[in-house]
Image: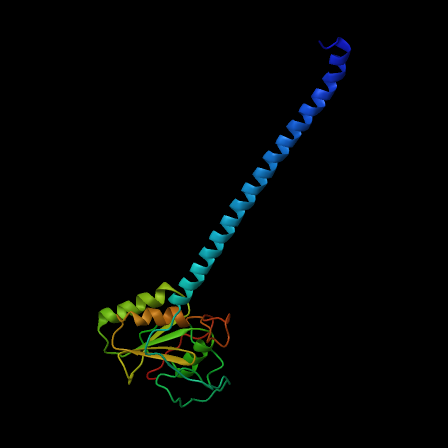
Length: 212
């Protein structure tokens, strides 16, 4: 039988022991919570990384050039007030006017020299034969009005019904309905070929000419 004195001495010891047990249990719960949070964070990081990789890959696929694109190198970027004779029809780069052509839709031809300056700023120049069916011209108009840095204009003597050009690149198309047209726009509008990315495609000239 335990005497009252021993019970009094055992009371504080028992409470200390119980306190240590409770503290140890709290510590274990905290450790489990920390491990759970770390695990969840790792899952989120992996998921985020996977989504980012998917988004990058998807963006790269969307900006992939379509088949049929022809590229040109060593194009001059100097300014000139003179009329320029270009090797490509329509031109994709080279000497050009100090002022650029405002982007948008035109129902009259624009000067080669000002359009080339727009290409230098990252524009895609879509040219079409003047006798292109009206519904296809309307499609090109809608495309030009749907986003910036698109220049659309007729071009007499064009080697194909529709030609899409960016700085140093070109694609000939038989129709404005060809899905490669929008693929070209996604790949090259303000694309990596742009010599002066960030330059404007407004605030220039909206003048037209009787022939390119």
